[in-house]
Length: 81
Image (cartoon, rainbow, N blue to C red):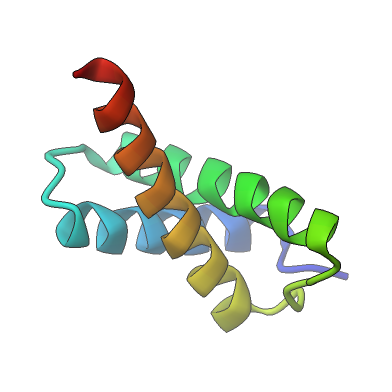
């Protein structure tokens, strides 16, 4: 069933916001949402290749989105230097 479209936006926004605080990134609300959602998609894909699947609930997806967004911010900084 998943968390739905609105839930993905809310969880993505929270994950992106927390990641921007952890990584000291100055991003706006729209980029926070994008970072959280894309981070969750990327990390879910990576984890599924290893055989790990995050539950389709708010908390596991928030954690996956947070870690994924941090990885995206870190990767962007590494490329842009």
